[in-house]
Structures are given as C-alpha cells and as structure tokens.
Length: 324
Image 1: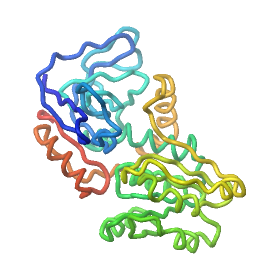
Image 2 (image 1 turned 30 degrees about the horizontal axis):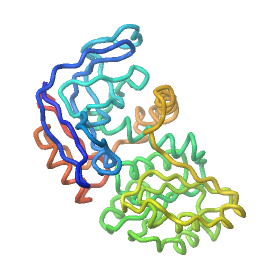
Image 3 (image 1 turned 180 degrees about the vertical axis):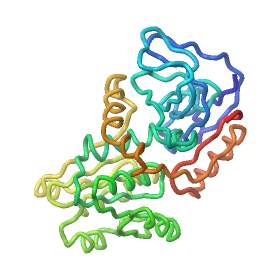
C-alpha cells in the first residue's frame, strides 16, 4: 500500500512516500481503509514531531472497517468510522478500538477526517480541564487554526462568549459568521486591554493559547478571578515565559497543558469517551459543523503541508485518498 512517512531533520520536517505492507490488526485494533485524513500543525513542527528515524505520518482520519483484531466488539466490517490513528496518511491504517468512533451520517469523509484529534483536544482543554460553562468568556489566541476554530464552535455550542486573535481581518470576519463575539487583529501580546474592556473589566474565564510564550504573559493578565489557562501549542517557537506569581496567587489561577505526547493509552481512551459523550452529539445533530478549509488529493500531501505552513487556511486542511 502507499503511505507517507515523516522525519525531522535540521530544524524542519520532510515527507517521503513509500510502498509498505498492509498492517495487520492486533488484539484491540481495527484495520481501516482510509478515505480521508486531517493535517495537524504540531506534527509538522520539527520540535513537536518525530525525532530520529522516519515514522508513519498522520494522526487522525476516517474510513471503512476492513478487519477486526481479536477481542474487538461493537463494530463490523464495512462500517464508517473515524478516529485518532498513527499513520493516517496511508491507504490503510490501524485504529485502537478505544479511540474509534462511528461516523455520524450527516458528515462527509473530509469533515469526519478532521474531527478526532482536533475535537478530542478541544474536549480536553474546554471541558475536561477547562470546565467552561455557559455565560463564561473564552479567549483563543491564533483562533484561525483547526483547533482554534473547533474551540470557537464548541464554546458557542456550550453557551460561552468567545474572543479570538488572528493576524488576518478577513479570517476574523469569516469567523464572526459562525459566532465569534470579538475578533482582535494581532499576532502580539497586546490584546489585554481590549479583552478586559469586552469582559466588563473582569477578564476571561478561560484562555486557549495556541501561539506560545510570546503571548503567555498577556494571557495571564487577561484572566479573571479563578481563571484557567490552557497551553496548547507554541507556533512562535518561544518555549519560555515569565509567570506573574502575584497574579497566579491573588486570582487563584489554574495553568495547565494540553498534550497527548506522554499520556497512556487508557488516558487517551478516556479522552475519546469524553468526546463521544459531550461533543459528538452536537456534531451529529448539526449544532457543530466541522469547518474544512481545503481538500488536497493524496498525491498532494507535500503541497498541503506547505499550505498549512503558509498560514493560509481557516479551519482544517484534509487529504483525500485516491478512491474516495
């Protein structure tokens, strides 16, 4: 079968297309014929992705079940599923049954492919750890990313109010059509005053920081009493920032990270169960409609990677397999 492999070298990531054997599902695994797979920026940042030898590329996708491993129940061959899966940029890939989700009938392959990793991360940062409630304020830095848009959509479905930052007026205008309450055109940490004004001087209850250390201090300053700050990524490559200990102490703040890198298989499975219980019903009934910016053919994955690195997209970039 055809598959893509990724390697980090000399500060950049490169893709290689290979002919590889079709994988065989082990106990607790499902073999899926991939129909589409989503791109995620973290995989293509050299500091985030694989180090050393090349590894299968891709982390989420959708397709049809081909074969079930030993002990797998609740699924049948031919069923349409989506899930997190290593090596998703391939004609066939393996999913852990605990992270495999039946596709809602209202979704296309492309929409489903961009959901699993992205929305499970959103569940982690908004619901499981962020505890965002109706009526609260959410600030998302770098809101035009796939995770940023999914956070906006989920927060609005939960009844929260959302402020987002982006370097593009056009992207912010488009996001207002799907619920963004306030868009701030900036890539720097100069948004605190506008955030405080919008929130009546109280600050926001939760911040999702996709940008990194260059805006970390402003994120802390923007928080309300008992506010929470989720660090999701560091697109700016600024990996260190000062912490305002006085604000942390006086405002009883909670700072937490959102990453799957060191989580156990059971912890990842717990995240999938939380997503299925809390967010999947909102996708299935249309309250949340995944935003796909552009679909590339399987042969065009390197071009899709370049498109993502150019920051041209709004929402998810998806690769479609040949026979879709």
